[in-house]
Structures are given as C-alpha cells and as structure tokens.
Amino acid sequence: MNKLKYKRVLLKLSGEVFAGERKYGIDPKILGFFAKEVKKAHSIGSQIAMVIGGGNIFRGTSASANGMDRVAADYSGMLATVMNALAFQAALESIGVPCRVQTAIEMKAIAEPYIKLKAIRHLEKGRVVIFAAGTGNPYFTTDTAAALRAAEIDADVLFKCTKVDGVYNCDPVHNKDAQKYTEIRYINVLKKQLKVMDSTAISLCMDNHIPLVVFNVYKPGNIEKAVLGQKVGTTIKE
Ligand code: UDP
Image 1 (cartoon, rainbow, N blue to C red):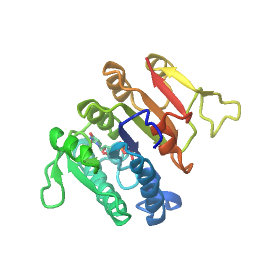
Image 2: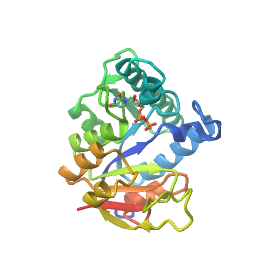
Image 3: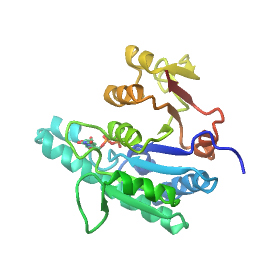
C-alpha cells in the first residue's frame, strides 16, 4: 500500500461545487463523482472528515444584502449545509463508504450532535464524518468551520477543494498571465489578500500549524494524490 503523507484530513468542499452546471441545488451526477473521489482516498487508509458549504442553496450574506435579518439569514445558510451533508452521506453510503453526519446545531432526528471524541472514534473506525451546520454561529463561514474542526480533531491537513488548480497571484479566470504558487506562507496569503479562504480561517490554520492544500477537485484522482503528498495545487504553510 502507498504511504500516506496525511493520515487524518479535513476536506472542505464548497456547496457551489454540488450544483454542477445547474448553478443551484444538488446535481446527483456531480455528487456521485465526488463520492467516488472520496472513496479512492478513503480506500487507501486515510481518515476523512468533511465540511461542506451551503452556497448552492443559501448564502447568508447575499440574503442579508437583500434585506433579510443577517442572523436569520446565516442560520438559514447553516441549515443549507445540513441538506448538502445528508445528500453526500447518502451518496457515500450508496457506494459502500460508511459515513456519519454531526451537526453543530442539534437536530437529533437526522444526525448526531457534534461531539469531538465521538467524531474521532468514527474516523478511527474507518467512517467518513461530515460536520454540518458550520460552527453553529452566525457571522462565520464554512471555511472557518473547516479550520476550527480541523484543529479540534487534530487533522494533519486541511484540503480546500476548488474549481481552480491552486492559489494564483490574481484571478486566473480573468487574467491569462496569472501565476500559480506551488507553496506560499500563510502570512503572505493574508498580506496579499489572496482569495483562498477568509482571513479568520487562514489565521486559525496559521495559529494551529495546520497546513492547507488548495487544489482542483474536478480533476479525477486529486484527493487521493493530495493524501499521498503528491504535487497537487498549492500548499500553504509556515
Ligand atoms: N454560515 C454561518 N456560520 C457558519 C457557517 C456558515 O452563518 O459557521 C452560513 C453563512 O450564511 C454562509 C452559509 O452558512 O453564507 C453557507 O456557508 P458558506 O457560504 O461558507 O458556504 P460555501 O461558500 O462553502 O458553499
């Protein structure tokens, strides 16, 4: 068996990726693709915890910009992440990957409440664990929830899965001269205000020495490669 570089990983998928070409909601085909990608990394022995966003269904900041109370909007956003988590759990279970969902806001009828030690036990038993409902608090993002949970469960790394191949000095979609970093320090991501994750999430990783790997999740095999420590995307570290 290949040697894993990272045994326990926290994988952050934004909700947007679940929408596929529909731009809204959940595309079952895309869900199936990501489930298989996670299965590949899981089957070589890595312990996989996940945080999934909710942007494909509801984003608190956009709703509050349109006049909705910010706190109510953020709670709605957190509920959207639970829908995505349940959908992804079903997709994983359907291909034989055991999975548990834990929520930061209690909703016992559908998922376990977040309990750190229980999450670690699931991971040790080979179950994927999805942390849903963000941090449970308004004014945060699921990127921050991912950094927080990564620190709590003592993850070896945080994978930020995106649509692009890594971190660039400017937006590669709009600028053909954009340059990709292979490695960059946390402090430079913050100073240059590079659009990787929000500053709270980057700071949490920096303060807790959790390396971040940013890569394109649409490329088949990338999650597995990242777990093995093969070159994918950009690594952010000290
Ligand atoms: N959210 C929140 N607290 C959290 C995490 C998320 O209030 O700890 C809300 C926030 O409104 C956010 C929405 O949930 O807009 C969906 O999360 P996010 O935008 O991070 O999802 P993504 O962009 O990753 O799909």
